Image (cartoon, rainbow over all chains, first blue to last red; front, side, top):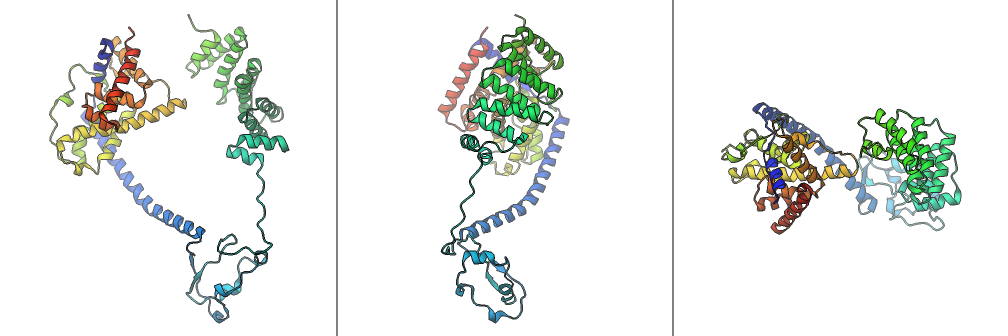
Length: 293
Length: 184
């Protein structure tokens, strides 16, 4: 092992926390407190967890039709003799069943007190045959918003290109911009973002739209000058907002990439004054030409 | 809690002393070994702010298993292995945070107290920054072996790998650190 690394290793081996007795006692008290809290949490969580698991198991088993969950229907005197056994009844057409009121009062009253009987099957229950002519309705086709929310941006883009965004709301425009960006259509994203700024400059999401516009211009389209203007717009829309520091740093970078060294330098100076300990100070100094050789 | 950080010359008094024969109650084990666990945690993690929680986690982990320990004298080694394993989890979390941009560069020079020479302070900082750049498993293996001085078998147990693998990781870490540290 080389000398310097060996020295560093020996120094590392001599590092101690230097805990004193009172430190250890304080930590021990904290340990006991955490142990008590854990016991309390377990005491609460175990019964709740057991109930949740039991409910889940019952639901899964019932949904698979392996076991018919039982339903206890209390106290319905008389009329028991009028009831035919459920399995003896012909299966009514789905349409007719749908037209019936959801709860069938005669059936309910036909149960003897305390009797246990199978729960009524739901319309999609596989044990019930499908009646002729009652084919299920086709599933509603998904929209580009659905595709986007699933993260299937190419499908969303295809659907969006086919139908077009239906509204000019900020939400739709931002989502459409995301779809365009994520599916590799940066130019369309710029159009959506620019329109969102044009129509909704007073929206709380406008700075985010401007910032995103700058990023698309800078990173996807290689248009640093337009990007710098977009970042400047993001700052103008929310000078004290959470994106302001990043926007200013990216503006410096964009001006630098556009060859506007003087503007980049001026904006870098603004950054260092405004955020002396900024997260992006190093990059800003580099792009703004503030680094001393 | 970790306000008494210092680089101490000479051997670690806690490590050199014979292991105290303590009854295996949590309180006794904690009083006897908490400082040792904390120091191991600090040397592995390099960040005082994470030490207190790790010590707590270690003792919460062993709380119900102290009675299972057949060799009370092996408690210290057992604690070191558990500390290393929990530290590995924290190092991995830290790596994710770094990747996500949620973890910045740490001022490791503060690991040495003011009595240490400026060169030593700088070297400590340099070492831990270099360790931060290593893969977690390499870092852990190297630290446990070269800094903690654990036996290879204990290092392998802490790293959940074979002896041959741990030797390979230590060698890889050594080579990387030599490149980083030994540039002068």
